[in-house]
Length: 586
Ligand code: ADP
Image (cartoon, rainbow, N blue to C red):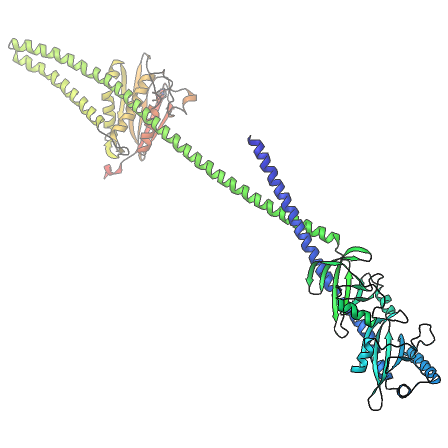
């Protein structure tokens, strides 16, 4: 169950990361593409301005020509009257010559009805001479405004061109006719055709009339209205051309005159960067169509870079997340550990309390046995003494009775001292009590408590006690230590035929040194380091708890002293040192 959901989650994450990388790459590629296209469009726009300039220059070069020629007296006088054949021939030659010199396409002279009286192409079959062009808008423009211009397909020649005309006026400024120059753009188209770009010029109605590539000319960029069609028909502007619409769709617009456009062109459907530039003087629009050329490597690099950045970000996030989780986990496990330690400590303390309790009970048991022993003997003795006393008094031996009272008295004193000692033992001892006390007295009291056992086991006791030995500490606890040491020594000597216990108390620099030596054979070398460990015991189960020395060690430390163990000649030597209480010397 669990691994399946984990694998599922893992694959989901992987999918998300990969999808993110793909998305980042796609966006970056799109952005890079758009940027490259915009740059391309801006470049194309600059080029478009250059092309427009060349067109302007071409037209401007000829703009003045008809105006200048209209001033020619020969032409004016010819139009003033009727033109005979000789005159016409002269005019034809003249126009032919000027046309050759000016390098224009055709020059023609129209009379006030629009009839061509002379033309530079008079030799050609397509000669204009004798044809009437009164229907052409440039003629009517010239008659009313003095000048005219019009782009049209030649009705006679079939060759399209730009007609620029100027009125020929009589002496009284009356309209005599029009001087017309026709410009054709094949050279311009050829020149423009050298690049890879498609260059188009459309008129005010959106009809393309100049194109540097075949198939584009006479296509309509906008739908033509019925009135437009009627006018085109009447002026015969595009003569018999079909004027098919050009289908195109803007995919993306960079600005008003700059688009990425899908065009169903003559060479099939293709995408172009389409730049337009309105030519205000002529009312035309110049178009430049260019295949978008975005370097594949640039796009790929942009995509790779974006995907790389995305992945780096994701991994950084994952890394940070992992670290955060790890830190949290560590924190949690630390807290758990702390709690565990706390619980264990509590358990241990409870266990320790229990053990202390059992140690106390054990001590109590031992003490009760010792006390019973201690007290039973004198009690029996006293009962016998009392019986003796009664006998003596019965016989009136008062003096003897008095004498017999003395040992009773002594025994009672001894018992009183024992109970007195018990009283101090029973006193509640707050830990850390540091009263001023004589260490020698502590030894005395401890010995007194063990007196019965010492006597029973016939231990020879050697005492070297310097007194008073003032120290600071807790008498009862120190006594507990001493009893422990003495009892251990007695235990060690158990079974030895000759038992010797030596207790020394002497000053050692700033310390009192109390040593307890026995001849019980000592502590095995390997146990020397362990005897102060809690629960270390070599005694049979039930006899020893292994707590005595551990507790003693703690008590001595608490009092600011040291407790150590070593082996002497014939047994163990336990040394207890405590700082000398200086107050005693003052
Ligand atoms: P317990 O007396 O309950 O065993 P202690 O902590 O008092 O616990 O003593 C630990 C052990 O140290 C004893 O079991 C014994 O092996 C060793 N020991 C203590 N005192 C002596 C001594 N005087 N001679 C030899 N061994 C001793």
